[in-house]
Every structure is written in structure tokens, then in C-alpha cells.
Amino acid sequence: MSSSYKNRIQEFKTALSEEKLDLKALRELCFAGIPFEGGIRSLCWKILLNYLPPGPDIMGLVPEEAEGDLFPVSKGDDHPAGNR
Image 1: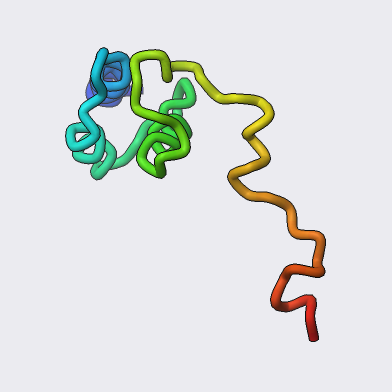
Image 2 (image 1 turned 90 degrees about the vertical axis):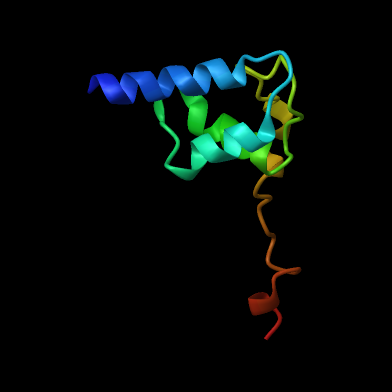
């Protein structure tokens, strides 16, 4: 892992641990790519998609009961391709 990549990870950790998260700054950081290490990518996407509120307690926060809410499994009856 290069030192520039490590610095980029540290930039994300710093931005995500701020007391008041700056969404504009987070978007600018994410525009060039989001590191995968430490769950940073999934956390950033959840914040940017308004799945998680931007707050100081978001690091490591993924409600287990809500993990299936992102992509609910279709039973076939409500899927357009299933109604032929």
C-alpha cells in the first residue's frame, strides 16, 4: 500500500470523525474514489444516499436489522418480469 493511499484513508477517517460532517467535503473526497479498507466505502455510500444520518457517532454504525433494507429480496409476485 503506497503512502499516498494511506494518506487518502486517513483523510476519509478524519472527515468521517468530524463532529459536524461536511457533506460537500465528503462528496469531493469521494469523487476521486473511496478506499475499501475499514468499511469506509460502504459507510460513505450510506451517508451520501441518506441511509445513515451525518453525525459524530456514525463510525462503525451499521444496524444489523437494517442491512436487508438496502436491497430487499423480491418474491416474484411484485417483480415486473414475473407477471408474464
